[in-house]
Length: 242
Image 1: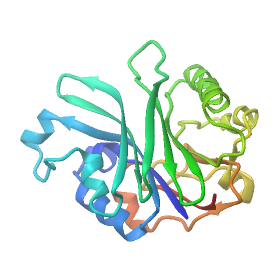
Image 2 (image 1 turned 90 degrees about the horizontal axis):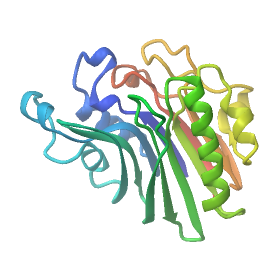
Image 3 (image 1 turned 180 degrees about the vertical axis):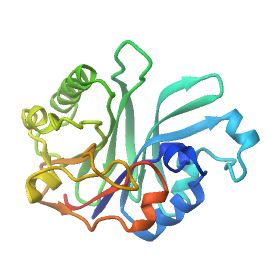
Image 4 (image 1 turned 135 degrees about the vertical axis):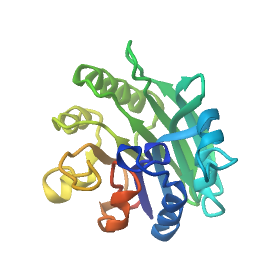
């Protein structure tokens, strides 16, 4: 099975130069992952709907799901007069429950952890889509919230995927999440997380894919160059066997 995670940047390229949602959908369809984790995906935006050519009538996550990922879940994080955005999970498998956990710290950065339970043919699979804050003190608290969620809500022995935009440019998350049994896929194979930001010349290692209680996991192929113009992050991919 394949997991792909990407910060959708509200459907815009780096610096919001161009609206790229249609191209992003095409790239996702070509990659054909079984599960997609999205951050900064727009649920609604009245302003863009009126002024941006090509803005979909559906929410962005429904538009991206197309007919390939019949089940999807959305966690609203940021709400403003024009609309809202947050995290989403698209899945080829039924999503039997979805809960968005608010991990915002006081200030202008609403953040959330979207916890979905997918029904695989053999057993449930837990998927937590993550978008953490820009300040290190906030990320530290949010990572503690994530570990608490894993300990309280996800039974030991049930496969777990945790992925998204951790904004962890100091690379502190691996040590903290090891306490709750999570291993980062790229770190385990290459010794460090993958470079993912900025998309046109990735330097910072901001995005992650963590697993627990899966039979096998490995990094997937690096995204093609086309992704460098679709968002400000490049996606990460992992193959796994639950």
